[in-house]
View 1 (cartoon, rainbow, N blue to C red):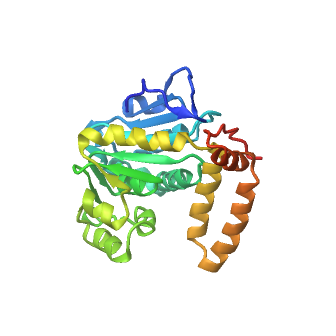
View 2: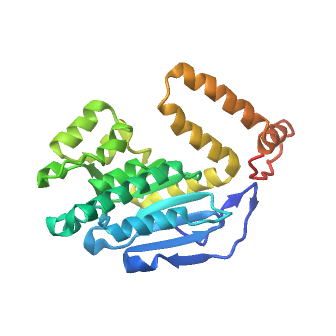
View 3: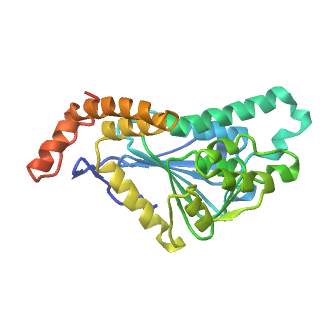
Length: 283
């Protein structure tokens, strides 16, 4: 993305010092840039097909959970023609041992849950191939913007390792028959097929992906941080509930939201035909 742009926050322009930082133990495999409430995390190892080695998984977790009082949105992107080819298979040979393998998959699972549980929205910007755990990473993000160059697959069975964990977010995003096709055959689906199945939020031409990402980021940052956090939390929580329970709990969430400071500010600004001035407070 063009990080020189100033993103709108609380109806006004927030001017904040640009901060660059890299997760050192990942060397050049992961770059992180934060400015004006937006944190962009870029997988930057095209030579390894942006493989999710243990160090990269740990780096991603660290970058995503890094404390920042002004953080409003995270964009996950990648360099090269492959968004991510998934786990580094060189780390999964028998010489590494089951204890190491357990650490790899525990770290990966923790990262995927973190993507859902972190209060700010996470956008995956995909312009290339996402396979196996790379597809899992995409499926675990809140919003996915892809180009027609992108494909998505879970081909682990072809190398003797069924994509059991990549299938967890996959089956929670796409219809059962689509998930079965991807997991059992390993064949890729196109960006448009992924859009139709619900794995992707939007498909745009490659030349438009930066502008579309920016548009989505602006839409998120223009809202109250606390209201978005509350909404994201309940959105995922109610997916696991029966509809009657979801309505009961959802009604309580709505009442609490309305009585938040920013809830009342939103109502009053709408009535007064003015831009809201958010406090971003949980109160």
